[in-house]
Each structure stands twice: as C-alpha cells, then as structure tokens.
Image (tube, rainbow, N blue to C red; front, side, top):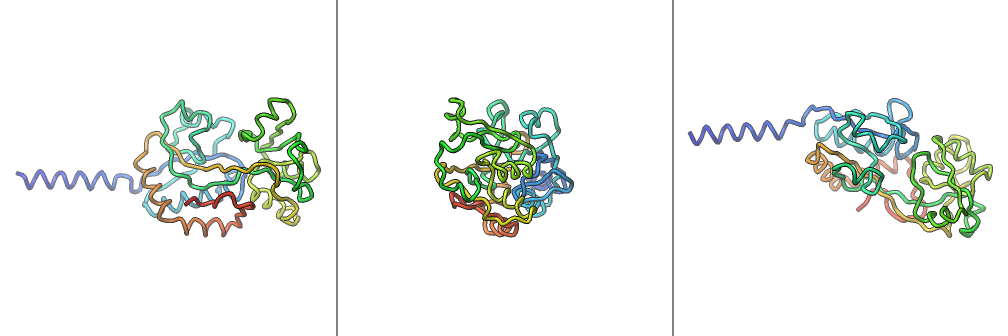
Length: 255
C-alpha cells in the first residue's frame, strides 16, 4: 500500500513538473520599432528581447507567441488581452501597484541618456528646451523640474525615423532614447554613427527592462535562473546586433 501511494505521488510529481512542456504562452510586447532592443512593428518581430525570450523557450521546451500591442494601452494589456507575460516591464511603471504582478530580474539594462548632435556634446542643461522621445515613453526624472517650470517641452512620435530627422534638422535639441536605436536609423540613412553622441553635461541613469506575469511566477523564476546562467551568451547576442552602450553607465546584460 505504501509502495502504491509512493508510486502515485511520484507519477503526480512527474506530471506536474512536465506540465509546462509544449504549452504556448502569449507574451505581450510593444508594437513599435525600437531596434536593436525590440522591433514588433511588423511580423515576425526581431531584436534582443525577443531573441532572449525565444532562446529560453527553446531550452525549456515551451512555446511563446509574441502579441504586439499598442504602447498607449500598456496599462490595460492584462485586462483586455489574454496574455501570460509582458515585456518590457518595470515595477515603477504606471499599473505596477494596481495589479498583482511578479517581475523577473533585469533582462537588459539600458543607459538613460540624452542623445545630441556631435557638435552639441558639451552644451549645458540650459541649451535644452525641446526633447524628443518615443510616444508612450515616460519623461526622465532629470527633466521633471524644467518641465514643471515650463522651461522644457517634450515632443513624442511613434517613429524613430521621424525623431532622428527632428534631431538632424535641429527641431529638438536632444532625444531621450537608447543611442543604439538612433545609430541604427543613421545607418539606414547612410549617415555615419558619430553624427550623434551622448550629451556630456546631462545626467545619465539606468533603466532595466524586465518581464512580468500574473499567473505564472514559477515559470518566471525559471526565466531568472536562465538569465543568470546565460549572461555571456546574451552579451554575445547583444554584440551580434551591434548594440552600442556609449558612455558605459551599465552593461546591457546586468551582472
């Protein structure tokens, strides 16, 4: 009898342990082009985030389907869409307190810097009165005082190409985006990458992109383990995309 009970328990445990295998999980992603970090403006998507999540899925024998969703509706993705995970995400973003979310460790860590034309690299903070950024992104804390004092205006667009053109034509003094994304746009325009650089006198901070879930914290824990054991592989992946970190405030793949 004891043997039978033990056998049934063993079978139950094995069944539960393998219940994820072959399951398809739906991952909500932003329907924007922010290459090389992510680009889900068309199907199939591409970028560093997608490749890391896809490699994890392959190693754990699960399937993932990326669901591009409007960034302007980011706070309602979990309520309105049947998604299992959301990436990128961060505990400080809008709905973090409203939902019972579990977050992964940082998947990538980006430098939050202001990108300027090379000839404006040494300009002081008072030089900046218009900053461009992606539509749906949140203005950096470093600008909050100047915005409140109406000394700085934030303009947004859904297109990196448009933002890059605005910078090139001095319609904005700087862009709050990852420098790799702008250098990719310059490459598409046949312009040299050193056309732009990081503003030297504007504070630089870091921002980590994570993955969140409501229903699958156990699988997210496995993802954390994967991130820890595949750091070098993920760094090589970022390098393969030509990722440029500029002023090295942080390695894109966190330690």
